[in-house]
Length: 131
Image 1 (tube, helix red, strand yellow):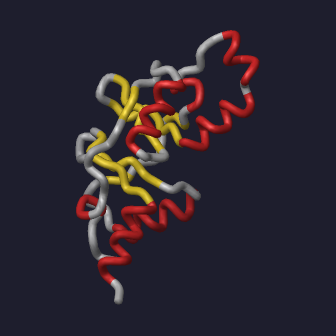
Image 2 (cartoon, helix red, strand yellow):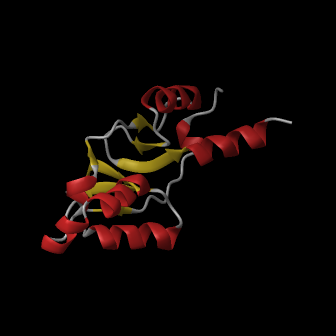
């Protein structure tokens, strides 16, 4: 794999802020048919919220939901590992395997979020480049 992340990443990243209510974040995931949201506060990537995070919260904190509304900040993975847009797909795949994650936020040279690389993006590469 000599291709770069920027050639295969999804550029249109759906994001939320850490103060977004979980129900709203879940509805956004459903609306867009996605399994993860970038969490951006003050133009900086501050976390990742996965569909698994949302499902676990719904299953495990019903009593807490009655007392207060959970926010994305309560459930997100803070300070996520990201990958530079000019990194190789090979490095991205190795990183995802090592960390056991299904997607990585992609950042530019200033550290700003510019995309997301998911397992599906890697599968697209494989399908397009193998017979």
